[in-house]
Length: 594
Image 1 (cartoon, rainbow, N blue to C red):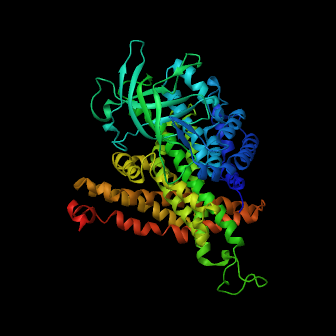
Image 2: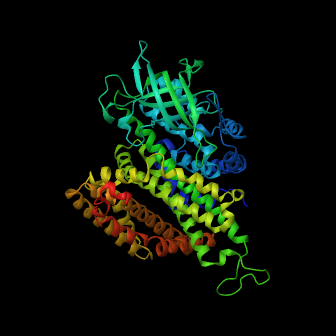
């Protein structure tokens, strides 16, 4: 089986052809020195590292898992050494501010490296990946001293970070959390409580782990309005970052789980641990969303990563595996059978994976551009970008992980019975992918956030900048064969939103009843836009005779497949989302058992 290969040509198409990133970077003053040549040099080095160092550890991590002994966690063979190479090469600091030791490169460039890392080995990539959210939170809400003490070490990669939110009795409903923070005379706080499902909460890669912890102050109001955010390091440190001694933080156990075995999922106990308030008191949930939005886009990338990995594995297998003859006659007459890639159903599964992997990459690349613009220094531009990103984040997180899991399953199915055997890696890809629809807010929670909190609470205003962009694209490209359908669906999207909104005015349950179908419809709609745009660009390149003909033709053919075979799913979604809440809500809870 072929090992993971970074899909560099497709990445470059997205960056420098479809989304014109070189012009984009030059338009943002702080990123103006980032050129295509510089970006390609960085990506080439990244590809070498993740293909040759990190990817070979993927199956090792799955088979060995992490080991917990007396509160200490040992990571799988090779993980620590790979992380040391990662730090020595300067990868953790790439997209962070120069004043705290970063290299000042665009966040969008970091997103590409996140895909490489995640596809090569998602379990390993979570260790440095979670640090980015901690860094962003401290950079946004921390004091100058907190930045100097903690941010510099996180940016260098000497330390890693986590987010500690969930407790045994509360997952999504954080208003129920019980972890408490008592003020100390020196201005610090004593944090006590238990957090569960903490990814990378304890490990042997670094000397210190910086936990970002939600807790309640003594006089805090109940519910979500009484939650504060704290920095709680594993090791107590001086202001210059030198380590003093062990804090009251310990790992009680690690979870035995379905997938991502190479990453430690920890039960973390805080026993009068010294912590430091970050941001205003009782505003922890607001500060936390800096972390959560970062994490949700990262999890959206997980869907793309598993779609890509499943596609690469199953494509390689389908080209080599000989079974039966093509219905239209032998394609490999000298052999005992034809390769299974000749069979329509295998092609359906391969093209579905390809359409979702490449389409998802487009969506992430588009969102990453918005992240850059938020840092542009142009207040109006940043506000517009932030609004679009707020709208697209729940779609990207939930939709891309749902179709990423579908793709991973298609990848396994292409192997037939061999897909169920661990040596091929397809079943690990399915297992590792499954968590993506659960953590950082389940699909149902993302759907409620999209439809209830964002779309309907703004009376649809939040979606208008994106739908107007699609409308303008359609007007400017009437000869595009996909534009008529795209324009029709864009209008339908608004009509469906209005219909659900009207129903919700009479019965609030209509929002929950429609939300997941609405989110999935929105995801298919967004990908329809990106595939139409990709087809437009590919056709322009073919018309100009700019070479790479096979690549551009494949883009057009994949767009045709998406519109013919995937996009029609929206027809049934439109019907189910407007069918009303009664079929879901009329049955008594007791009647479910009959």
